[in-house]
Length: 243
Image (cartoon, rainbow, N blue to C red):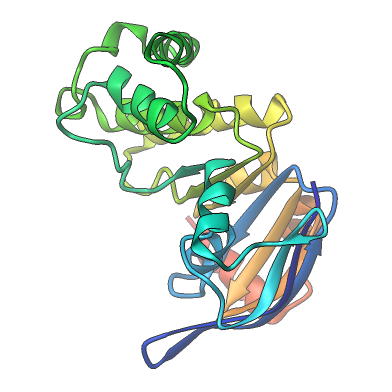
């Protein structure tokens, strides 16, 4: 997969969140977006997901620009798996139902086929015993694994994750990151916003460092962490890796 950001800008209210971003990632396997809070990482991910549209510029996937009309954007979003940091599970539905619902409503699977896919996915993620539990009866790590299971059940072209471990304790964080490493090893393309530098260094083949709404540096993960070129990235890594 090839991903290209061209002169991408986005303003939210009075704040210019993204400032003319230009970057190309090819081939894209696992791209980690890192940087301080408020740097524009989540906004960039939302634009890629088609949940927002840029004010200027374009995003191209495999040399095809993302659509701007809502009907075409719905088709684009249907080809993605999206995981938010707040899980976004339906609280009144079981883990099984949280997965079957989009399979039926968005991807038009018959109920029996959707349930079969959901059960197989829960089994794969070691969640089969929790299939009929509602989110409130699951731990934070289990809820996030259900959210990831829901995102991958439809076999998306691209998996997008926005700080999927930010609300988890260290043990649950490790549990979720291990699962993402497994998906990465299977060759599923993903873009992840993360504060876990260890995961970014180990799992990502490309890293983009954002600050003040711009990609100040991007390239192979090991190169960025071993020999950052900008003072901004050196300062950022010094802070987050200090303890």
